[in-house]
Length: 499
Image 1 (tube, rainbow, N blue to C red):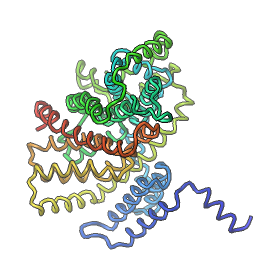
Image 2 (cartoon, helix red, strand yellow; image 1 turned 90 degrees about the vertical axis):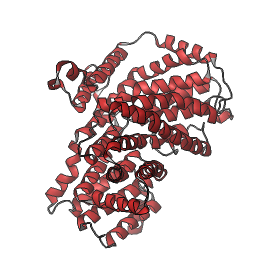
Image 3 (cartoon, one colour; image 1 turned 180 degrees about the horizontal axis):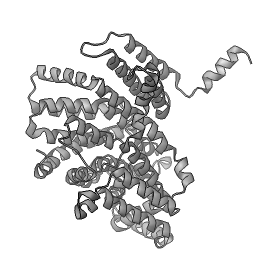
Image 4 (cartoon, one colour; image 1 turned 180 degrees about the vertical axis):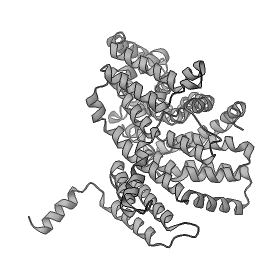
């Protein structure tokens, strides 16, 4: 083999997109060549350059996100930007892999395998449709309620909305001869696909374990407030309960107005769901095990033992998740081979761990405080009152998701800085309101685009919704849901004593 042939084949085999890869490399080189901004250490600037390059690489999809995370781990380790020694740099790089919050997400993704294996997720969907499916809007509410029921124990919102709920939605649409291939998608499919998707961001906002980035949000809130606001699984669920339920009840109705189905009455859906349930028969033993594990996890994550028997019985959420996975594996509900083969869980461990590591190092090296001070000075010099400043911060944070294809990347890049600036500008009595609006916005921003999160390309790819329609409905729903959280949530959080 000639040298030219060797390099040609090696170039073709490389798992990256050439133009985005060149742009990303140029970004890193340019940033490293620029002088260190005043107020930052050289290490802080280098860490920021690596972090920004990683974000650009993720947004432009140079390579799979796990590979990009591995790239950042290698660069940080070899640049020794966090430590003077190679051993210290590697220790810093891998430190976040032991983070219990990351393992909570990984283990809970593995637990969600049981919903697919046993068919319990599909059974729950059919039960709701049998109860509410006489009208198309009723099917929409059935899908939304099923999504809500699954949310606490499916931290992969992609697995929940795209892997469990979307096949149910699609089978219903096809059952009514609503098929993009036939040009009949607007019969019921467009409406149901939009409801299928827009239930996902709302439920993701409602539980700590409903989407992968939420523990990162939890960590940032605690850091920004100096521990004054620490959202446990229970306090997060309670805070988001009222605005989340109102948003979930309002969403199918708003979408009904924005994308009305051609077929309004669907009595056959009830018949179809009942037939499906009859075919499935009574609960199988694996379904009973999964349901029992589901209930046990909810009880322990809600810290009910500590409420009844005292603080000594407080359980760490990650320990609870490990118990749930062990029960499912030891009972044969989830096979160990499936655990080993679940690429999304182990991929999450790598890329999520890398982003958490870089976010922590940016904080340690003073980058977050430096950037926050710049933003604070800019807002102060503009003369905006604190109410307008808080509104601008929430809206800019949410709408900037147009530039991101990953909620984790977005949250890692911007949330801690925005929280820090907001808390410096908002008077102490109102800081809880601002913080909880930022928490809500971190999930609601997923409404905007067809690439906003892993769920969106799955549902968009089914062909029921055009890109223009998706973006238009997404913007309206983002504004509506932020208003719901601001008004209903604001009153609810006032009652709970957050402000």
